[in-house]
Length: 252
Image 1 (cartoon, one colour):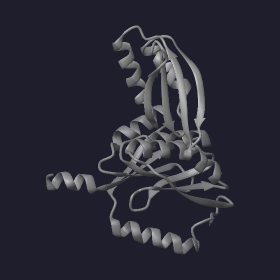
Image 2: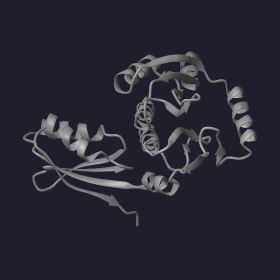
Image 3: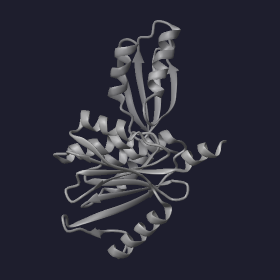
Image 4: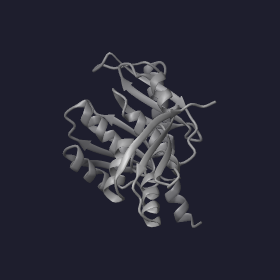
């Protein structure tokens, strides 16, 4: 590996984007869009009116592309800054914030009664799993910041306004879900296309053809798999598709 390539991999980049977000639903959507970007390890709402997004990512995050997506799907968005994260500065900031608050959780706030910080440790085997975990976390009501912590990035730190349902969130992250969809697949090419669509869904860890005629797709995913969205995509790109079942896999 070249030294320049190693530098790009090790670089942590901080992007601040000002976004017009009129409601909580807009904030949640903006956070979800940001967490879907490759390499993103932390997303937080900043500023007095929570109208700025601070995104930290490993490697080079496409700031211009992200701002463009936010403009299209949320509202006016403008890049405020793009800079390298300095390790020393980051550690000093974290230390100051901890001292200022007097602890980890809850944190007092002038605008709200308090902000709560939840840290959940979990097994995330790949970047796709991490992306899915971030997506699940930012979808919770009141969440304003989500970040990976720990040396192995195996902890998720969630900060929310008011009380965050920590137990419910941990349960959702822990879940494995099985989805079975019946699909009209006329040829091998259709089957291959259907499998490709299924594995492209976030959180999916297993896809298999089932049934005597191999006309059913069994999808297993970590967290919540968008079964309805997957069925719709299969209808559009392969053929008639109907949801047969959606169930939680209980660990023995």
